[in-house]
Length: 281
Image (tube, rainbow, N blue to C red; front, side, top):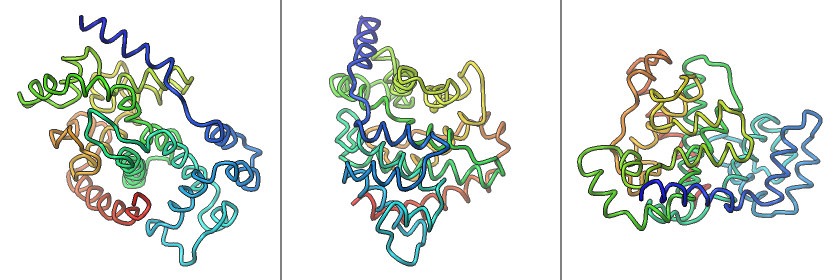
């Protein structure tokens, strides 16, 4: 029965609509080393929603830009091509996550807010630990909960049973696994695998709740795990899952994070979340 349910869930991955055509083209363009801001701006003009989200992120207090940015080219001048590329990616992710996520009690916009917060926290961790900046870690953090988009309907149907299991004091994703035969992290990894994302990035999403069970441990998986847990611990995007989360002791040891550093990043995450708050209203 459980295996039949898992097969049904996995079969939904093939029919799941990926990003809009413009969003997909924008991400492809960002991977082109010869691309420039004018090309990206021209493409985004075809999707006003993407452009609006990009500019809202750019104009948030997080970046502290003194004057309002009104175009992609202006954004590049003010914060640089690399940061704008990441914000375009965040805006593209909004195109598929800005909806109510049934089963998880997440109203429209909350999953995107959580995803952006985890990405920002991951970057903060990299700076604090003096780890070289990585676009792939940012992307993995941004996409880590994508599996909820498919699993939510199944969670909704079995929520009473899942909550009974979770009431035993185990994390929500483990309760998902026990009842459904899979969990949102595994489904998210399979989604990215089907979209031909790099293996390391797929693994970071697949094991973001349980990095110690990954076939191979790595910095990307550990960073995304710790960033996600920090955001959940301070209440960003918790929904029905509650607060039953703590960072893996092994992951924090592998990264060399001290408790004082975790406290610092947690307090910074709250500050960053407040600075970005206007974007999600």
